[in-house]
Every structure is written in structure tokens, then in C-alpha cells.
Image (cartoon, rainbow, N blue to C red; front, side):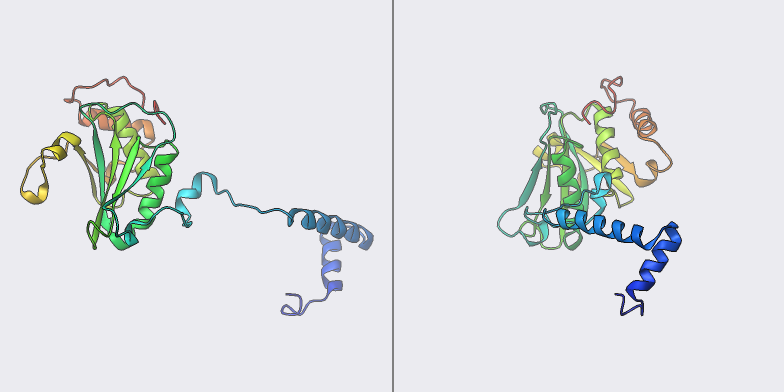
Length: 229
């Protein structure tokens, strides 16, 4: 590096002493201490922790990727934290995308699911099920608990996977009775949220907005949005 920048060790020493207003003896002491720490730290294997920004960093995962899985129709992620058991009113948020782009989206959702940020279970369609497009289902325990449904929608928005104009919610009962839009069935989305509904809102404001929008639904509207975060 010094050769590339046409610098000498003397240039570095002089610059350090001028900036830090110290002598060459001070520089040598600092250098010796820095290399002592460096030599000790290089003995260990380090791992970067991006904290709350980890969802936005592409990192390889050991689990199967939807785009190259051809032996099963679905791959799953389960929460490692407590979450209410599913009721007869259970359902899921649906996220659709092209299979070639779905790996990054699924990585974020599977991590968030395992960490207890979403519901108890999420699943993603694979290349075996459909070679061109995929759907991800993010389950909630009860579609009538609008606070929990809204909380999970907000988490999906926060980790950056709500990309299309509209995200729809479908009950498991409608899936069991085989109601699908491509078959011509109407009004099968219990909830629909536009990406613009999230903008300029806090989590609490979005929850209140969601509950007001669907206030005709029978549920416990007093439940806090962070109950199962």
C-alpha cells in the first residue's frame, strides 16, 4: 500500500506525530501496542453482527433455497419463541414473487420467523411446485386478532419484503375449501393492504389505521400490537 501511494514509513510517522502532536517515541509505543492487540485478536475467529440491519445484508444460509429446491413443494421456518396456538380462524399474509428473486425475500422472512418477529410458521413454494413464480405464506394464529395481524404486516414491511402495491391476507378455511382467485372465486382476501398504507406511519399508527379500516370485524381490539413481538 505504501509503495502504491508512493509513501515511506517516515512519511507515515511524521504525519501521525503532526496530527496527534506527539513525538516519534510516542508513535513507536502506540505502534507496538496496536500490533500487540492485533496479534492477539487474529488468534480468534470473528463473526460480524449487523444487529437490526442484518435483514438487509445478503448472507448465505445453510437452509435450502426456494429457487434450487426440486425435491419438495414447500420449505418451512418455525418460530423459536412462544406464540399462541392456531385457532379455527387462522390465516396468512401472502407474498408473491418471481422464483429467481424469491431467495432473498425468503431469507429475510425465515430469519424473522425463527426469531419470533412474525407468527409461529412461514413457508415458501419451491422450484418443484412452480419453476417460475413462488408464494410465501406468513401465518397468524387468528385472523380475528387484528392487532396481531397488523403487527405481522408491519414487521414484513419493516424488513423490506412488502414490494408489490398490495399485500393480501387469506384465511386457512378459504384455502381448505379450495377458494382461489385463479379459479374465479371472488372476495377471498379477508384483508388487503397497500404499500402506501405503511408510509409516514409509526407501528402504533399503522395498527390503529388497520383496526379502523376493518372495524366491522369481530375481535379483541384492545390487544396491543406488540403482544407477541
